[in-house]
View 1 (cartoon, helix red, strand yellow):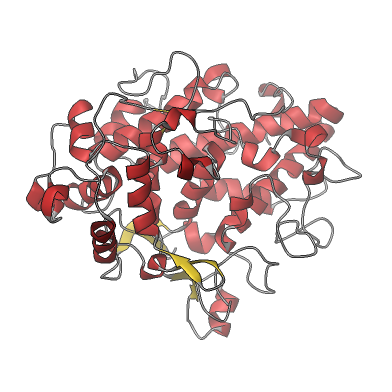
View 2 (cartoon, rainbow, N blue to C red):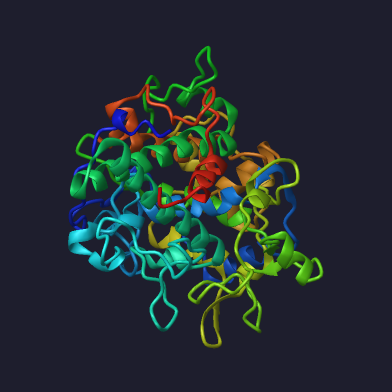
Length: 459
């Protein structure tokens, strides 16, 4: 089913700490003029003044898949708050590639606690029957034993992480059975298979849902069979010459568009929905019955992914716009303390000395730049707008919130595609004609990936 023999084995994981610094797309642009704390607070409050509208087409599951991608690409836990004038000195504890190191960590030899004791090449799972699990592995205090603690930030993120744990183990057993591989060779083959399926979904399912149609057509034109070709387009903005890196315009602004897609709550599955009399599970709630992670999964709170991804009745995300779910204005971080996520995003752009949206749009030859009236902010921010806010407002004004605008699409599309093309072990580098064996005319997406994991069995 998986045609494992067509996918070359991956090199065994090694410590990635020296890899993956941050950099710039356009390093010589002046930073956006700083806004005082009162102005940042006013902008943030305006973003949460009304309840976000629902996207008519984008299923809610892609909100959290985008978060998973972000965790897989970069992690700078403390230094991003401390380095205010030199983003290139930031240390990235993730590799700048779609290689799932947020799942595999540094591999079974260097981080054996992520793997099963008696089957050291299978990823560790939570307790369950016949190795099936609905939760992450956890210690006695309920904290997840995972390569990246952010994969347990919320219930939807942890449930998505479980999918990848299960799928690796299933693929490992398949290559052991079908190819006769064992040990390190089987592990490397299964790891490569999962990486290639993941990369395919990012390029062929995720990007077509979020990018502006003209940018998508340039980066991945369709062939006669309806399959996108990602190897022909010449990069205009992201073309590293000394190795892959994560641009700060991407990490600290453009790829944070996902915060606008978050809803105030979700129905996790039909049984729980009925038990809660139709009420959604909220992001945060004082009694703790909410979507926050960091604790063992409650009985009956498993995510039914079809309700987040499949068909007309799937729950929808928010729009790509400047309206955020109101709970994001008071995100619990510790006992009695909260943070304002929009203000955090705005302040991060200032600390990283990002250019304003208008200046970056001109540098990237975007022909349609928002007017001060369209930006709608008071004072100097209307003409020199923080990049994160500008990208959301561009989507809202010019695309009615249905996709990213041209500027956001150019940054997100070029960086994600560029990182796959720069990875010498990706499917685009080693076998650009490769297709997921279960696909039909390229129709293999996130739902199909999750269904592969749901078929998990020892055989």
